[in-house]
Image (cartoon, rainbow, N blue to C red; front, side, top):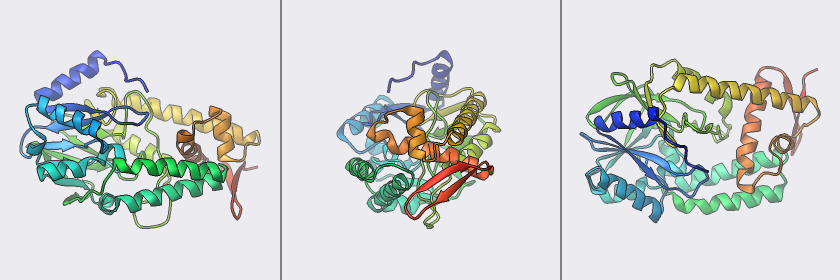
Length: 339
C-alpha cells in the first residue's frame, strides 16, 4: 500500500508535536498497511508508544528513530501499548529486554498480551469457525489459518506491569494523559488525550488515508462471545468526534487535524456499505462470503477474513435494526431480508 503524501496541515502538526518533545518514528512492517508510527515522548518517563512487529528490520527502524531524537533504546523508561495487534506490540518484549522499561496498557488486555501464543491461536480458530459458518470453503479457511500462524514469529508475550483502567490518567513524558477505551478496530483500542494541548494519540482508532478495519475478534471479558466490532466502532467514533481534538497522532499514515470531519466521512461510508449489503441480501445473496465476492470479486487469500469481518459487521447492524434475520443451521448460517 502506497504511503500517503504529506499535507501542509499534517506536516505542521508534526512540527508542533516536535516542539512539544514528541518524535514520530516510522517503523517498517511486512503488512499491507505499511509502516507503523511509533512515538517517543521526551520527559519523565521517557516514553515510547507502540513498538512495531518483532523483526530485525523493524528494530533497526525503531533504533534509528530513537537515535535521531537524541536517545538510545536503552534510555526508554515506559512503553505504552495502544492495542493488541501484532504490528504494534510485537517488539515490546525486545525493547523491555534492552531497556528495563515498564509497560502500560489498558487492564482489559493484560491477560491477552501475557498469553500471546494462546491468544493468537484462539483468534485464529475463531476466524476459521466464522469463515466456515459464513460460507468460506473449509480448505481455504484452514490455509489462511496456516498463513496467519506464520506471522506469530513477529510477536512475543508482553508483561504489563502498569495496567490502567479506562478513564484513568497516565503520565507519559512529564505530562498527564487521560485514557479512553475506544473498541472497534480491536477490542482493546485505547486513545490518550492531552486536554490542554488538544492532542490525542489515537493508535489505529482513526487513520488519515484508509478506514480502520473493525476486525471481528474474541471478546476480552473471558466469554466465548465474538465482538460486534463495527457496531462498537461506530459508537467509539461518535464519542471521539465529540471531543475538541486539534491534532491526532495515529498509528499509521498522517497526523489528523480534521478528526470530526473525517469521522463523519467514515460513518457516511459505512452507512452506504450497509445499504449496499442490504440490497445484496434482498437480491438473494444469503452467504456473507458470497456478499463479499459480490462486492470485491476474487479476494486475495490474506484478505478473506478482513472482508468477511466487514460484511458481518454490516450484517450485525442490519440484524440490530431488525432488517435482516440470520438463519442458523448446524454448520452454516445464511441471511435474508425480514419480510
